[in-house]
Length: 109
Length: 155
Image 1: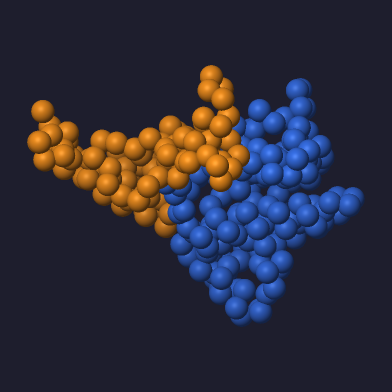
Image 2 (image 1 turned 60 degrees about the vertical axis):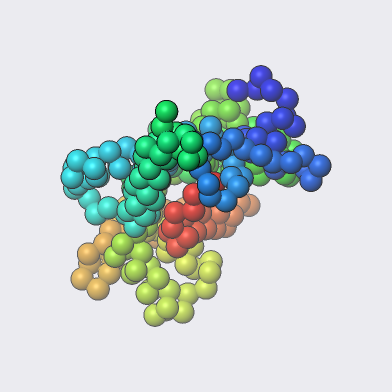
């Protein structure tokens, strides 16, 4: 995790590091067709957060109409519902990019 | 047992002033270390070797329970500090490493449809010499903000 110097990691928006000082531009990695606002945090950090993983897992169960089993029959929390909706939107966005020819900015060969 | 943060299931909290925590003296570095531990659930990196903290297990406050807490706040004109206490009672399910103290529950809501922690455990926390109020308000504030702010993903 610490193979790179702190200023480099700060420039990537590493969630383990303090915020970058003003003289370090923060440019986290983004790709695979992402066209939204400039990210502020490293996706390597955000995608491995427990709550992100939980939403991804819940989405998998929801996609099979088995969300009730995932939550052991308890009411689904408001935040988890919103997370699943957001995650589903991102999946659709990625799949659209994946099927768009690279000549048009997509990821299809 | 430490459980990672969750929007659906129980998770654990540790008070920032717990003596088992080995935090940097610099305020910004300290706050960052706590933020990372709370986001990732990786507390082991900031624990003194071999020491075990007091672990608070809480549940997310959501749905009808959240509406009841909000409504109680309005009906009883609760201050922010009092709301933190109520939120902590609504969320707290277990305390480990706090002597013989256990979380008892009682019915709440118009028809007793909710179970919340009794004041006994809150009073025991308040009674911790010198830091009791800070413990209750910090933990209560965390569960309350998580409840009312909802999902705030990093991007």
